[in-house]
Amino acid sequence: MSRFNKFARSLASSYIMLAGNVVFTLASVPLATSWLSNGEFGLWALTAQIAGYIALIDLGMSGSVARILIDYKDDKNGGAYGAVIRTAVLVSLAQSLIIAAVGVGLAVVLGPALQVPASLRHDLRLLVLGQCGLLAVDLLL
Image (cartoon, rainbow, N blue to C red; front, top):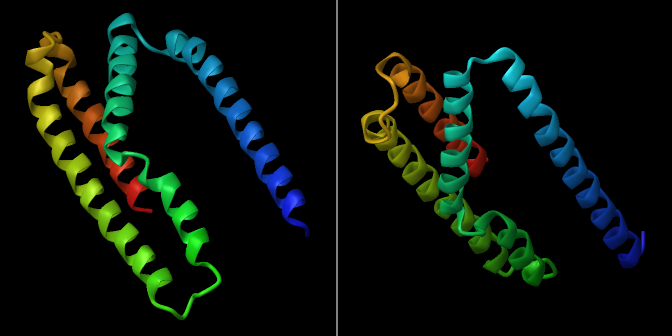
């Protein structure tokens, strides 16, 4: 397969993934409002926003590793290829631990700080811990 065909396939799959994300996002809000109360929907939306900001801890590392590896793909025995992979794994591990720590900290202080009703604070803690846990595992993998 030629380089152009690989590029075109990659570009097309990226747009398909983007379209799928848009469809999911547009469908999830009406679905959530039909199943959740107003308070629960607010927690869901709040947790989604918090997860979006916490995901910024990645600092673009996930996407850049593949681009850096391309520079060393022809010399896999030179040591630099493995060093890039090792460094990426270690940085991802550190970022995952930071996300987990931030998630635990936010789960404790967020309810009172945002004046979430006492009846929903336990749910907020679980949602924040779950979202941050999923983000940490996703970043690590």
